[in-house]
Image (cartoon, rainbow, N blue to C red):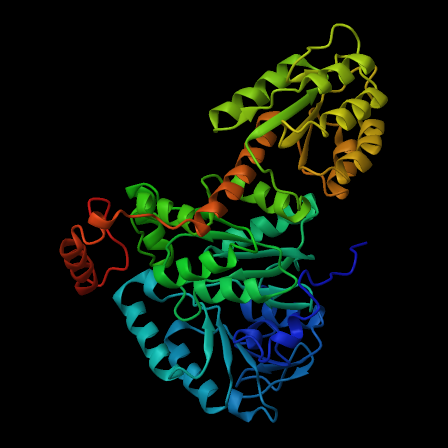
Amino acid sequence: MIAPLKPTTDPAYDILRSERQPLSVLFAPQTVAVIGATDKAGSVGRTLLWNLISNPFGGTIFPVNPKRHSVLGIRAYPTIKAIPEQVDLAIIATPAPTVPGVIDECVEAGVKGAIIISAGFKEIGEVGRVLERQILEKARGKMRIIGPNCLGLMSPRTGLNATFASTMARPGNVGFISQSGALCTAVLDWSFWENVGFSAFVSIGSMLDVGWGDLIYYLGDDPYTQSIVIYMESIGDAQAFLSAAREVAMTKPIIVIKTGRTEAAAKASASHTGALAGSDDVLDAAFRRCGVLRVNRISELFNMAEVLAKQPRRPQGPRLTIITNAGGPGVLATDALIETGGELAELSPETISSLNEILPTHWSHGNPIDILGDADSERYTKALEIAVKDVNSDGLLVILTPQAMTDPTQTAEQLKPYAQNATKPVFASWMGGSETKAGETILNSASIPTYPYPDSAARLFNLMWRYSYNLKGIYETPVLSADEGNKDTALAQEMLQTARQQGRTLLTELE
């Protein structure tokens, strides 16, 4: 059973915030209309309506379909203007050419928010771009729009499922935003296996209106969100993203995977969402400067989401201590650690002396701490209890391989309280399959990030350290000497003016 969520902010939070968040109409509506709702099995319109019905969010649902008197047993209306109550949110799943007219009707009906599920916009070319311009003209700045070409959004805490996904996300503290709807469904499936929950789950689509900056500010303001995870194909309004990220990253981790690093991938991204990729190196530097952690693998994005949800402690440095009952896995973890910029912690004399008292004579006498193949659960817990106190260490990785004397399940149970109460992050790698599965489940359910491979765990530790290090950049101000203050100012201003005239929001690498 999932424990009730509690806000992570000070009790004064709600008093200090005098107005509702601008995007609240999207995440916490009281009335929702599904435009394009239908009884047809397997259709998007039916799935959207069914998801709202089967996941009560405390509001009222209105199907809109001019050809039906009712849909799924609920009275239907021919248009949104025919609905007798004020509608907060309209979910639109009608053919792309009809959407501008639908938006016009929504504005006339006083609807403040819309999610456009429909595809067939700028991702198909100029015809789609014309439709998007028409949508913005009809909206007249009077409503906030997510999409088009998106899966929708979920607010697991309130129960709102405004998507056509097959399952509802479990409640938790990770805010997830993705430009790819298909990736959303993959993350959703993975999250149940790894016991990760979400405060918000958003498929942002083509970002016609609501963009990265809007959502980062919203999740930064949300007391139930502890971290923000983003799958990005294009940055869109770079200034809005970077401004929001720099402000929010000071209090909540932001993890981004930005695709389109190669020319071929950038072209694929453009055909998928109509996205235009920016200079990758420039974005990389900008992410670091505003405290955002960038990862390059989907597995790292998933794993960082898990780590941030489960492990509130951040490493204060790159030094990792490894405890293992087998030499080879310890070496694998060491290679991965060093290759990605980390360091092996140098055990203090006090730590070595304490380990000598509880370990067999032939233990490794160094880091990795090889407690030998006959280690039982008690040896593991004693070694962890000693190693976690070493001031030369910034984090720990506990590796277990199933051996005759090593019970993976019992060891996990006994390690659990030590790892949970540690003052620095603790990772685990329970290597194997059927023999280690129960132990892995115990550790994961206790919010201890656990992986089948030690090199993955070592890389994740390094990513956590990189995040901590990036945060320092937010507070740093470049220092210029007196004679450097006006150096090449005219040239810089000329470059900026040229970029603006060309409609660019990013400088090239040469610039």
